Every structure is written in C-alpha cells, then in structure tokens.
Amino acid sequence: MKKVAVIGAGASGLMAAYAAANRGNEVIVFEKNEKAGKKIYITGKGRCNLTNDSSPEEVLANVVHGEKFLRSSLHAFSPADAMSFFEEGGLPLKVERGNRVFPVSDKASDVTKCLEKYCLRAGVRFCFEEEVRRINRKEDLFHIVTSKRTATVHAVLVCTGGVSYPSTGSTGDGYRFAENFDVAVNALKPALCGICCEMEGLRQLQGLTLKNVALSAVRDGKKLRRLFGEMLFTHFGISGPIVLSMASLLNELPLDEVSLFIDLKPALDEDVLDKRLLRDFERYRNKQMGNALVDLLPKTLIPAVLRQSKIPFDLSVNSLPKEKRRGLLNAVKGFKLAPLSLRPMSECIVTAGGVDLKEINPKTMESKKVPGLYFCGEVLDVDALTGGFNLQIAFSTGYAAGSSI
Image (cartoon, rainbow, N blue to C red):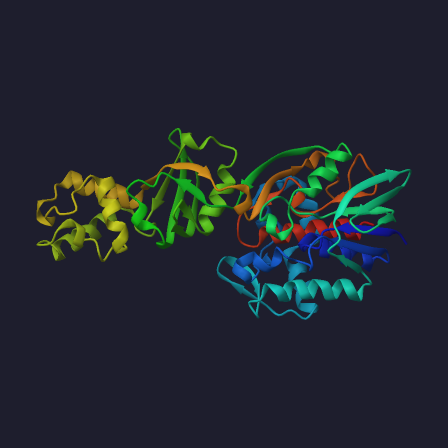
C-alpha cells in the first residue's frame, strides 16, 4: 500500500483518487476550495455534459491536441466505461443531440456527488480549504507543503486544471509544480471560447441565436474547417457551441489572416436557394427588399445581409437586378465576419497548452523524469471540441493515473 496525494478535487482528481484508493492505496485529496467539483458545477450550463456516447476513435477525432497521447487511456476507460461507472454509482444518464450525455436530473451537482460517493466508499480522505503551496522530493518520498501542514507521500497526482475560470480554483498551480520539477510546460492558449469580431454594422445582432447553420474558417483562400450547429451574436462578436469549437481550432493562427463565413441555409444548395429567393420575390414583388426576406431570415439579420450584398434596404423587389440577386445568394450562403481575437483565458471553458506530453507516460500519466509524480486532466497539453469530450479526457487520464499506482 502506498500513500498517495491528489491535488485538486475536480473531474480528473476525483476519478484519480477513486482509482488509486480502489487499488488499496491510502489516498488524501487536497482541495483549496470549500467543496469538490467546483468547475463541474458550471459545465453544460449547470447540467454537466459528462461524456459523449461514442467510441474511443470518435472521441479522438474530436481531440484538437494530444490525439496520439490519449489513445491508450481512452481505450482503457472509454465513454462506455464512464457511462457504466456513473450509472452503477446510482446516477441515471440520458443521451441528447450529438450523443451528448447528461444526468437525467439535469444537475451537474449530482455528477460530483456520485464521484465523491465512490471516493468515500473507497476510503479517500478529503482536505478542503487546504491549498498546496509546494511539493518537495527527498529520496523516494514527496513532502506536500500545504496552508495547514506538511504531508509525506509516495506518489503525487497533480489534477489542478488549467487557468480558465480562475474563480473555480484553476489558477495554474499545476504548471508551477511541473516547472519546479523541471517538467516542461507548453505555452497556454485560450480554447473553447467566444471570438471577438469587427462589429461595425452588426451591433443590432446582439442576442440573436442561429440554429442549424454552418460556420467556416478560411485562410489564404483555403477552407480550414466547417462546423455545423448553433451559435449566437454577442456584444463582442460570436459565441455558442460551434464558435467555441472553432476557437480551439484557430488559437494557433494569426486571426488577421482568417475570415469566418456563416452559411445561413446549409440545407439548401445554391440552385435550390436561388429558386426559393425567386418564389419569395414573386410573393413580395411590391415590397421593399428589407421586407421581402422575412420568410427566409431572422428579421434582425436582414439589414446586415443586405448590406453585405450591397442592396439598399428600401430597394423595390421588382427593381432587383439578377447580378444583385447573385450577391444576395452569396451573402446568405457565406455571411462574412472578420475575427479580431479570442476571448480572454479567464472566460475559456478549457485551457490549451500545458504540461508537455513528451514528458509523460501515456499509459500511466507518470512523469518520465520524476517517478511517482503524475499529471491528469486539463493541466496536460490536451484539449478537445465541445460535446463532453474534455470531461471524458479528464476521467480517462485520471483513471489511468490512479489505477496504475
């Protein structure tokens, strides 16, 4: 039996603590917050999209950084394993659009409670409101210096998260611990966040939600990625599920070289859309253009689409030239936005960058340099798109670390 310290009682920490205790180890969890799972409480708008009902390969297809590294841990503790784990722990689950998995109760707190129950049954001891300030290593033992004591253990699992949502306790402590042991940390970048855009002429769109649209990113005439789903306009630019994922895909690129395009009618090809426009124009032939698109587009979006099409709002429908109709069609199929920056790190759902994966054993999450030192979850340089994939990564890496001790 080994004495094991887990730093951080988030998703990866709770899973790692349970897995280590379940192997017969004596496990103590240090958490600087007053309770466990503080970040879990705000995921999925308080409902907690805890995994995605898909195969490990499908999860890996949604990983932005660390796909090869995560292969082993995702196969060892897959989404199916995670779902069985929670349901066997007394948490009924349901699968929604996009194979997103939520608790039937729609309460993120129930996910944390389920994890805590597993830990307590396995004998895990929790120390809340106790911040780890320093980790020292002497011979084969680690000395954990907290705000209240010094604890001596055989192994340390660093599960401190990133630097996103610092109010939840994610303030980058794990990166400092890594660097103190000469474990490399890659540059931190925002991921799963809103995108600030040039808003001139678009202010009236604030609060508008678009469903079933496609968002594309283009650089040097080449389409980088196309995502389908829901998004919304905000005071700074755009947000929503497909925007958050797009931000993760763009965070290493100079945004002044990127253009974004919204296909407002992805279900219609250009020929079908053109026929639809002609039908609407026939119906509203005595109206102004600003009133002739009400069946096709949200009312607040019409002025902006017409502006991009260079069509006056008050132009009579029966005066619209054919070439202008082509411009309108292009604007509907590719409404252009100019991205300026990603939202600040403090607003990101996850942090990209982190502990260099070349430093870590992918099967056990143990440091290759420092035996007995493990890193799990968001502190690692891994991140994925929206849909429950990031929490699955937290559970899989936590399980890999804990069960290897």
